[in-house]
Image 1: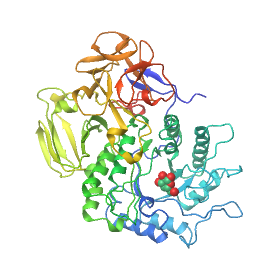
Image 2: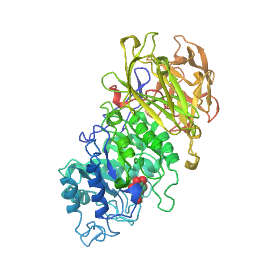
Image 3: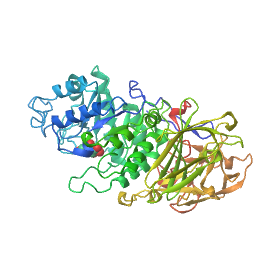
Image 4: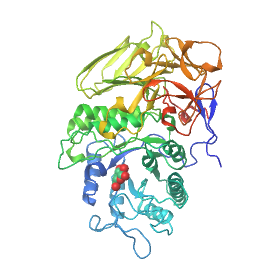
Amino acid sequence: MKFISILALMGLSVCFGQPASAAPRLAMTPPMGWNDWAHYQCGFTAQTILANARALVRTGLAARGYDTVTIDDCWMLKSRDRHGDLQVDPRRFPDGMRPVAAAIHALGLKFGIYEDAGYATCGGFAGSGAGKDGGQPHFLADARLFASWGVDYLKLDGCNIQPATGTAGNAAYRAAYQAESIALRKVGRPIVFSESAPAYFQGTPDWYDVLRWVRRYGQLWREGTDVHVYDGKQPERSRFGSVMWNYDYNLQLGRFQTPGNWNDADFIIGGDRGMTLAETRSQLALWSMMSAPLILSSNLDQLSPEAIAILGNRAVLTVDQDPLGRMATLLRRSAAMDLLLKPLQGGEYAVGVLNRSPAALAIELAPRDLGFSGARCRFDVHDLWTGAQHPSAAVLAARIPAHDTDIWKIRPAGACGAPARMGAITRIVPNVPQSRQDSRDYTRCVAAPGMVRECAGTAAQIWRIRPNGTLRSARECLTQIGDRAALARCGPSASQRWTYTLLGNLINRSSHLCLTGPASGQLALRSCGHNVASQIWTLPNDVTVGSGRR
Ligand code: GAL
């Protein structure tokens, strides 16, 4: 059966052969909560978990929506018992798991657990998947056990999945995650399903295929590398670079996201050591601009009052939890700055400006910088960090400290009209080592008149996408000319019309060739390959399933 047909539909939006998810409607806004992993790794007991659960309530963070406490790897023994059942580690949980779950529920919180779709977890503990030397998987029995404890959320990792002889890794992963989703539907309890499968394919052509099928089985998925965990030996080592890295890869994947189906950029480590308060603001603001899950992973008892205030900022959290669930559009990227725009329910927009540089940055944004037209366009502005309100403002002005992110909600006045679909067109440069951790290395921008360049935030790198399928910069249209793409005066020709697919291809409607860009240099038109990095683009307003245009 063909899972998805990729077709052109209405300009550059994307169409699907089937609804994205047949799963129950869970997690219609991004999940929020706490998980032990990024702070404790395997260094925890029931006490650690319960102390953090109580801290969630005491700090008020639970009341702000952080409501699910998840126990990550290492809670079980390496082997199953003689009946084939998982065994809770008695040193960590002397009374078993049931009372821990009950205590978490008694606090008014939900309870999550970690397992793995392979024969062993990443830490080497008993997995739910088929045995190392074959044998039956345990998905259903384990799901029943979890349901009997009152589990509300399952994170299923993807270590140690063995492809059956002759099958590709992608197929083996798909079979395992599908089996778990079927099992979860049989246990008589709604359990949010977090899938780690895509993370095992990041940087490979299969990544995009996996990102297509995970949506059918679960509500959220980790699609890339782990955010850096706390290291007790070097607690002050900066972890901001790893937060930037996760932000960068997550921002490219908006088209896979819709309410009930979330890209997961990994834990919120803001507030913990290795992250300043400015960096904590950045992580929460950026994750919220992306509608990413907000899973805190720090020692909550050690959070400063300032960090609690940031992580619990109600106004920022409403941006994350906005019912439209849209990924922010990258309007502009330069070495120092990202400018983001996110439509919210009810005609408001969130605007975010990340200053990734080590120096303060002064910005002044006019309505046209955000895609709004009209000389009389004004905004009612709400600064979400300070709470300040600026009615009928003609500009957004701010001085943003190093590594900080400012975030506003704006309500455009009638004179503004709807914003243009406008912003950067980017591609990922594969195989950039994470250690580089620099957005300029990870992404490249399409630049007028027809080049791929380092993202510099110039006017030549801002594109307007029209419903008729044209890509415009400086009032000219990106046009196929021979085997190249360059700007030309806009006209009715199909060589200026492009179809955008879920896999990220821009297909010329005249030649049916794919827009192809090297990491740097001239744009060309080539036959479309299967998930070829130089042919995969992220467009402004990169919506697909969420647009209602299936
Ligand atoms: C990784 C996963 C982490 C954590 C760890 C446990 O694969 O990305 O979030 O779950 O395994 O071993």
